[in-house]
Length: 34
Image (cartoon, rainbow, N blue to C red; front, side, top):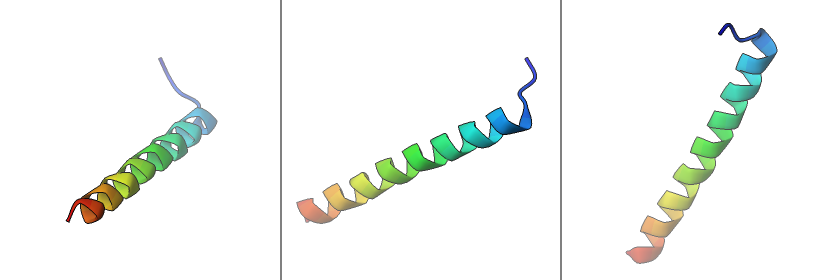
């Protein structure tokens, strides 16, 4: 199935936001544990 440019941009933005928040929480949790 071919994605439109808009869908690709939205998916990329959503994934980047999710990955960013997960990475931020993980770093915060690690720094909290030390």
